[in-house]
Amino acid sequence: MSKSFTANEVKEHNTVENGLYIIIDNGVYELAGFVDEHPGGAKILKRVGGKDASKQFWKYHNESVMKKYQSRLKIGELKEEAKL
Image: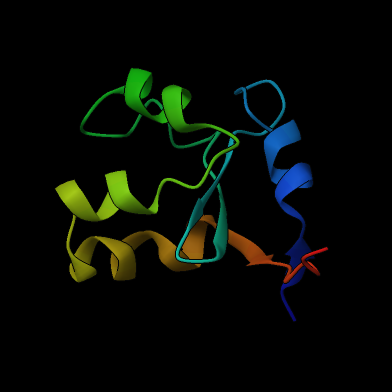
């Protein structure tokens, strides 16, 4: 079973040293071990660390990229938070 994360928990992991989490379509991905492998370079991943990167991801990638890396990098789902 995958873990659920709040947006604030993801936000705390905004550097490589803290795990570098990003959100793509409500999935939470841990990229600290992937930054040096990223074909587009580490800089872009570091820029979106701790944030929802869905728009940026889908602008440059297709479904096959998601399928290739999802099992290795996905660590959970974004928790639905009550809107007050």
